[in-house]
Image (cartoon, rainbow, N blue to C red; front, side, top):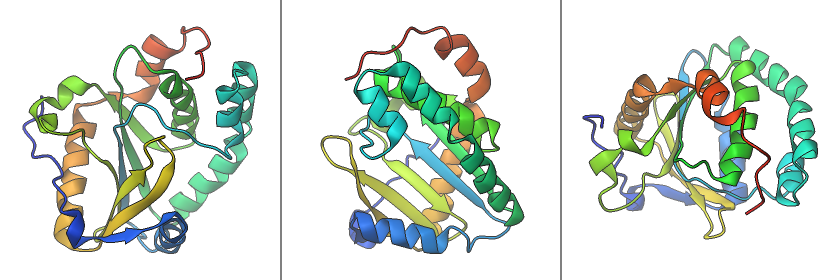
Length: 207
């Protein structure tokens, strides 16, 4: 377990953004952090992503098609990564993975592997790294942009993206970024984890 304080966020100090407002706000802010980093923490083990073709194929049980559609994202991700590099931004992600790996997460890890191949820095941690940090509740899904923006990402009970709570004080971002960076430092590179724990798995059954 890491000797870190969890990212305790008082949501009353942030601004609740419905889904459309969150997407618009993120698009406006993501390229304003030239020369800075973005850190993402993913904790939940299953989501639903209606409208994303690869996830739709996975959800209907067409595993080969879902993998083909992931590969079709490569050109877009390469272009996105080049734009990120042009802005001197580094993207970091920590993915918490519980075993046995949930069907959704097996699919997502294939997508994250492609993201890593295109330049995103991604590491995996297990729940053993969290320990007492989750005594009362699971860690939130977090995303920081630069030095002053943090999103606590919100999902419906069905696991569908539902917006975020935005914090714009530097103290919150410094704390959440340090926490995520600590987990990242304790994690395993996605590529080695994928080769050992994911690559050999049979096609998952949709949830």
